[in-house]
Image (tube, rainbow, N blue to C red; front, side, top):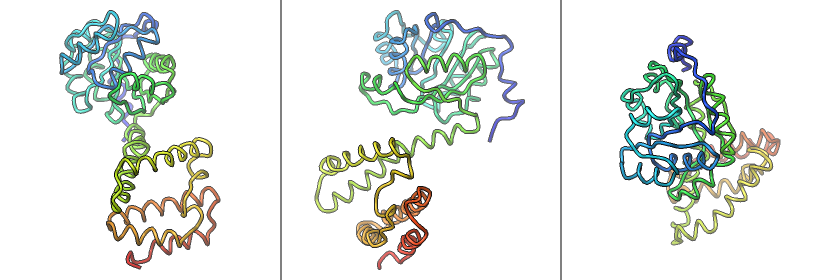
Length: 312
């Protein structure tokens, strides 16, 4: 539910803050995981100084600080004391506690990098006079810092903040080569869930595909060697044609006979797998109809097969 006007107003700092230019901005991080590594290195490469890092793991904080010129590891209080803009890149469950525990002040800004956590979790910082916001890159960051850094340009960064922090965060996103997206507060969790469909759930779907290969004795590696080129081609089609128009497969062609064969085979392996297939096919019918690739008769034929008992 969207926050009330009163709730938002109560989080506004009493004093107006004029942020320094990005090149003079003193940035700090609380949390030194994969996202912090990628974001801090990218900011430094873009000419934005990162001067302080804190983490639950002192070793992680020291390692990250050691990779950045003129950056020191310390505790969260030191980050708040020395920085104009603090990014909270800690696990989501810790954000509200950090916001309560750290001595924030007027004349600084605090932004968490969670996709789903409400910006209101930073309310204690706002009550202390700081500006608060959200800055979430929609990207999966691996363990390799170089690969994580390379994956940042081009990704979308969801930004939620009031002026003047919103403008600063958009400028930082632009400097990183990212696309800034102004996100309404009531859309935050839906936005984050959408990323699951394009990332986490793809792994789950490929996991089902790998199980099918393993059912005749093939290995996961053999399955991925065959399926990943198919997935890459699918992504290229999505980029060229969009979601509905580029969808391949028997549902988009109205090939009810092949759908029936698929259902029988999947039922023999695992009824739950067949049930998931049925659900996905029904969504596929809707997409194919939207694209004009499937007429009413074709859609009816596929739906009729999906309604058949699973053992037919």
